[in-house]
Length: 162
Image (cartoon, rainbow, N blue to C red; front, side, top):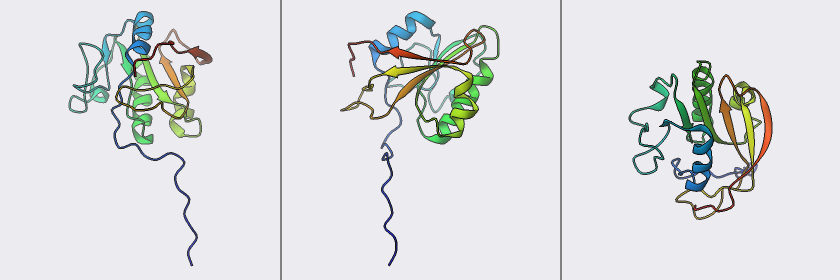
């Protein structure tokens, strides 16, 4: 008789293009003045300039851009996007802000997230198109020459528009 297998802690989402809540994004826009949405789709982009899977934000030059990234949240994608964010943010004038799940047990977190300013988001986020809030912890990673490694708590805007 075989041992029963445990169910995964978090089921894999059927999609990976959940949109950032508008009010949440607008607060970030006021602070960072984004110029490009690097991991968007035609349906959920937040800025006039954006890159999709087809135009591949990972293959683009981010030099002197203020980049917003809500990447796919699988391990492989998070590793690629945080590596890109770190590398691109070493150029003067480049700022990258990423919305990510808190996954401090994963290699991308230890390799890249701890190099950023980490803003832990208090409460749960309800993404556009989702019926309920994301069940895990989320954070913003801010990569730039002006934002060094540090961790802070960040209150999310009260009015979420899901």
